[in-house]
Length: 424
Ligand SMILES: *Cc1c(COP(=O)(O)O)cnc(C)c1O
Image (tube, rainbow, N blue to C red; front, side, top):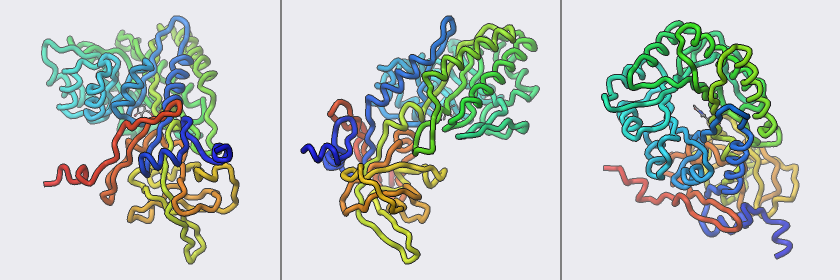
């Protein structure tokens, strides 16, 4: 037993191999305490005396009924981008006043749903969406809205660029003269209440300067709007994008020390511009759940190709792990019963889908695996389950929460009947 404890990888105090045996593989495992700690870290650090702040979890990263429940318990708000995400939140009895509804092309049905459930904030993407909303809203309905603006900044990972052209599909440009007119129109509407702006500059951002630049540009625009329209921007939702660690080459900055400085800058900048500091919101998705998640696969074997490439084959695929194929994302992994062994042998971890792009990890050094060893892939809590598909009619894995040496199933593994449920 002692040896086993040293040599076998554990999640939340449980051996990965035991989880694999109990729930089968592929399996998504979420360390519940890690998610809760991240929620509490954001909640605690995103604070500043005398200004209002709010942390909103971007649910597209990972959403299930159990996750809604957890977010509710931790006191965060929720960002949804579709009627399906909203439906899940409603079914979990998530407090509607804490729901933010995003999206660049909401349907009539989605707008109706937002109005019916009296959600906290609807984020209007553009003029067409505002027009549609004015057609749909009845006299006895009210809704608070934010306008999605495009600040002309795009940031990904290490760099950010200020674009003078604004080609994003999201929001209205701060450089477009019509944006001021749209704000005036929204503000005049008797039952649609303009509260402020929302913008989001990108994802997996690992440098502070993009966030600082973003906040400055939005504040300067709030000032411009105040001068041009006398409409006050009470709220500024600056979106998500906070980077996480996938491999050792990703070095996120410390959020605990960043947020107080960030909010301090916002307060000072507002003072300089002579505007009242708006309420500030952020929407972390990835940073709440990514590192809490692990995917477990069973290794079926190793294949050395004629061209001398070494493949490890696992029982999952791009259907449960999209990000490598989609973004050339990189991952760290260990073999559960050899996780402390080092090796210089390089493998490519490939799935079982009929697609040569079906790769889980392009290049990783691992000890020589044996058949039926469990491969644990790290940092798969965000954009894995939520991006999973039934490509090749593969069944979506189960999701398990682990905490203090106990595990609970929060999403069942799909069955063959699930696959043909809607087939006629
Ligand atoms: C995707 C998204 C987020 C979350 O992004 P992360 O990179 O997961 O933090 C937040 N807000 C909006 C509007 C988004 O589209």
